[in-house]
Length: 614
Image (cartoon, rainbow, N blue to C red):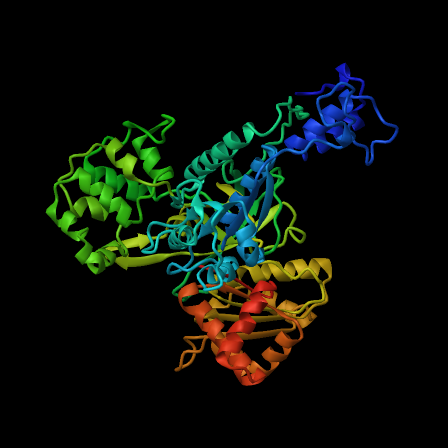
C-alpha cells in the first residue's frame, strides 16, 4: 500500500510520521490499529483500546482489550565471532516478528541458561571458531549445556543453523555438538540442522524459510483471520548497500606502510564511501568481494583445454557468465577442501585421488590440501571426464574477505581505511599470492573500485562509559582497529586512558603508523605504548613478554576497570596473550590458575575482555 500526498487528506509531515511508524510495527500491531481505526473513536489515542463492536462474538467481559495472537514463544540465540551469525539472527528475528511471532533475541552468553527448560521453540545460530571451538559469546552457554546442570528439555523444540568453513577440519563443529546435545537432553528437533559454508546466504535463507513455514502453518489454525494493514511504502532513489548489494568504493589512497628492506608488505587503503550512506563504528569490519588473479584463471583454463568464452550457469537461477569471467569473479580456485575433492573424485577415475580420500589417509590428505589450489588438483589427478560446467557445479563461491576498519567515521567522514598485509609464499614449486591481499597490493590503483559492505562486530566495541581506560594488544595488521579507537576517542573527547601493546618484526621497517602513535603519545591521547620487535634482538620478544614485564601496572589498570582488547592471529598470539593475562592475575592478584581463568571469563561476560582474532 502506498500513500500519495496529492490524493490523501494527509500533509507531507503526517505521511512521513505514518511511514516511520508503520515500518516499525509488527503484524499484530497493524491488525490492532486497523481494528481501532475501524471502530468508534475514543477521545485520546494514548492508552486507548479498540472497543469490541456491539453484536461481536467476542466475550463482552473483555470489551476494550486488544485481541492477543495465540503463538508459541520463539527464542533465537546466536553465537557469533565476526558478526555474521548475529546479523543473520537479527534479520531472522525481524522477519519472524513481521509474521506475528513473539521473539526473544539474544547472544547465547546473555541468555539465562537456567531458563532453557521454559523455552518453547529454540532456534540456534552459531559459528565455529578456531579448532572446533564455540565463539567467545557462546562459551558460557556451551559449558552449561554440556554440564551436569543442563536440564531435561522435553517439550522444547529446536533447530540449529551452523556456520563454518569447509577448509577447516572441524567444519561446523559447534553447531553439530549443539544439535546432538539438545536431542540428548530430550528436546524435539523442529527442523534438521543446516551446515553452511562461507557462502552461507542461500542455505541460511532456506533454513529460515523451512523453520518459519512450519511455525506459521501451526499457528494459522489458532489465530483469527484478519486483513493485514499495508505498510506505507514510498519509492526511495537511495539504494541500501549491504552484503547482498555491495557498494563500489573508489580507492583514494593505496600505499605500502613498510619501509625499504622489509620482508613484509602492508598496504594502507583509503576508500571513498560518499553516496553510500554506510555507517560504522570502531571495531567493525569492512567486507570486500575480491577477484581471483586472471593469470591463475587462465592457467586453469589452459590446463583443462577449456574455451574461455564458453558460457556456464553460475547458480540455480540459471544466470549465465563466460567461463573466464566466472573463474575470475565468482568461484574459489585458490583453496582446496575435502568436500571439493570428494565431489571431484566423481569426475575422474584416478585411483590416487580415491586413495587419498580413504579414512586411513587423513593426515596425508591434510598435508596435500595445505598450500595447493585447483590447478594442482587438475594436474595431479587427471584425466578428467568433466566439462567446465561440471567443475563449476562442484566449486564454492569466492569467500568474502573481512578486514578490521582502521579509521573513525567521525574523524574521516565518507571514508573508510584498511590495513591489509600482502600474502605471498612459495609452495609445491609455485609462487602463491593471497586472493584479496594480492588484488589490493598488485592489481588495484587509485581510481579503481572495490565492492564493499560493512560487517558490524558488536563483540569488539569501545566502552560505553567514555572515561573507561582501555588496553589494546595487537601484532602486525592487528593494530588496525586501535587506530580507529584512538581516532574516535580523540574526536569525541573521551578521557579514559589508552595503553597500546604492539608487536612486529623490525623497528626500522615494520613500525606501522609510527608517526601517528608518537603524535598521540606526545599529545597525551595515548597514555602508554609498549612495543616488541621480535627480530631486532638475539632473543625473540613478543607482546606477551612486554605484558609480563609490565605486570604490576597492567594489573592496576585491570583492577581499575580497564577493558582489554586483543586483535590478530588466534593460533599463536591470542593464545599467548591470554596465557600472559592469566599469569598477571596469578602473580599480582594472588589467584590460583582456576581463579584467574574464572576472572577472565567474568571479564569476557562483562564485555571487558574482547577479542577479534583470526
